[in-house]
Amino acid sequence: MDIKKYEAFLCAVDTGSFTAAAEKMHFTPAGISHMADSVEESLGLVLLNRGKHGVTLTHSGELCIDRIRQIVRAEQQLQEHAAEILGLVKGKVTVGAYYSVASHWLPPVFRRFLDDYPDVEIELKEGGHQLLESRIAASEVDFCIYTEDRSSGLEWYPLCDDELLIAVPSSHPFADLKEVSLDMCKKEQWIMPASGQDYDVLEALGPELSDFHIRFTTIENYSALAMVEQGLGISMMNRLITTGLDIRVRYIPLKPRKFIHFGIAVPSIKSASPAARMLISYIREMLFR
Image (cartoon, rainbow, N blue to C red; front, side, top):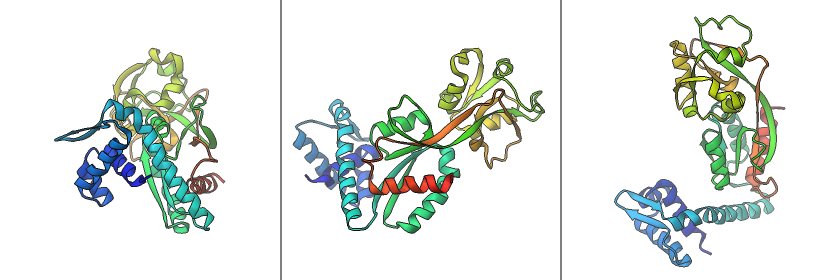
């Protein structure tokens, strides 16, 4: 099997054009197009829509893309296992993580890991919980670092707990309180991050979500806090997100206190590549010994 043509096909899909894929893989656009044609010919299916604005998957392509990703990842894992037998650890690891985890926890781990294993390439894909779930389901990442979801069916390796906090303006009546209840917060105007779909916040509010007055939604937590600072409402987020932010708001614990549970989700630690398993061990050892 010519695995390179499948890699070229995936690169074209992920970048959206033969030209961008060619730049990334150091081929000509015609070469990438030829390899994509070869994939289609071998399967007897039209997988790509080709147009002036790039390439997109056809319906057949949508049905096949996950299997093609699995083929490429299996080849990578085979090569990495062969390298492991030779006493080497090399290859590529793709990590999915919350934005806060990526910025606060992972840089020193990556630095230490790459000092020890310079032949390993690490790709980081950041996102919210739902996006990361879709990426691990589609085999786009080797493992994810986010909050626990017992319904996912993935293997789970806990890291730590992080407290959920209510963010209020410095002049708010809650600002001097040591804790607030969710019932008290129902009377307030809310600013919801992640376009109102923050997994951890929705889990914390639970079935009472409809009792809260959502005034604004934002994509970024930083934007939500900037709006809180201006007195436009209150918000909720975990403590890690607030680390290092220069915004004049008050963070107040809930009563009763609520926590999210950070950990590593992986389809199967036994089936993971040697490089992925090694990086997971570094994360677990360095962050929360």
